[in-house]
Length: 470
Ligand code: GDP
Image (cartoon, rainbow, N blue to C red; front, top):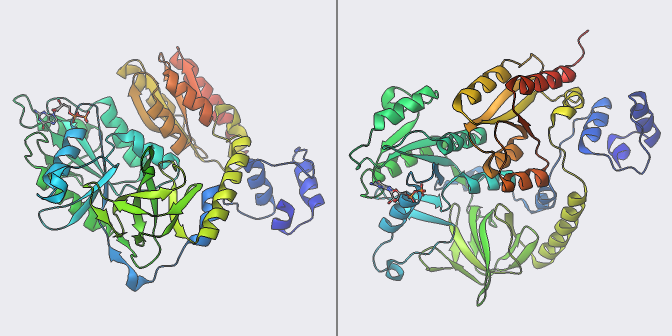
């Protein structure tokens, strides 16, 4: 198959491989790296697409410039535990339910949209924290337009705050800072701004580019101002979508209700979703029988940036799955094909960066080694990170995409999957769940009790990976 794609004979491919010491048989399944390498030898560049992408391409519809209209920003709230993410989400949700609407009772469906006092819409993903954010990104879903980072003014920039900031930065998602709990007597917003400045994040009133709002989620002080700042950020992004086509978007969450059947909350990202549409999500499909928003209102259609709970799928898709609208025949066909592709991919092991593999990878053009550093004390985190950064060479750059004090967590492993990073732990261990996930996702975790050993291993690996100079 590869030879045909490259327009050469099978023998040419085999003999080319032989000349590099790679012995391959005609019916052998090649891994991604080998394919990239061989294609490169014949002057081709390879682009890999997921099973979902392959089967979605035929469903894509072109947008005409004149059909694009502005859409509401989609916001995720992240930050350290107990800094007030849930309180902020609850406050915004409650204050924006107009009286009389389903008795003002709201339900958690995974996302909600509000209209601010200035009459503009904002959509919030209703799962506080970065777990959902990274889990979606790990599945290739790009949903969040803006991240709100909540920091309690009576506390400080904490490990999960740093983690949240790193997640947003790796994803290239702009951040707005919310300094919460200013009603507390010991609140000190300036201390927070200073800590941010020390991380090279200058907020606006300190002459920087990051918008920042002091607020109290409990008393509601400053929340409207935060919403206006989110809208300002959205204006810079110039978010647009075409409502005049079949809907596409992302699954936010799904569940099975004993009475109603499968429920899925989807976020429409483009097009308009209507009752009666045949929806294909992951490897499940079904006709939309009913659509509800978080207020329990029945809807007949939902346009771009609208989160809605739909009824009618024949199974529960996963959060982060893309959805499309198509015909029943096509939905069935693609769902079956996806299941088959997923099974095949499950059999083939995923290849991720490991130190031992670096030499081979650089020969294939690998240029950046991403590392997550976790250690028992801050001094070690800094010492280890600094030394590792200094190992960067012209050919290969070392990047510390996240560092922190404490156990290696599931969130660390998820970040490693999205950024194809390795994790180095010094005097710390992974949690049981982190280890399980790392095994499943083939993420390399290296544990050390001597800093020098860690540095030396990375140094050796980098030297092994250096391209030969002439
Ligand atoms: P999360 O873990 O980040 O979701 O934090 P929560 O929203 O659960 O808040 C943690 C605690 O802080 C709760 O006891 C809240 O009542 C309290 N809290 C949240 N926001 C404020 C605030 O603006 N002022 C005060 N005084 N307490 C707050």
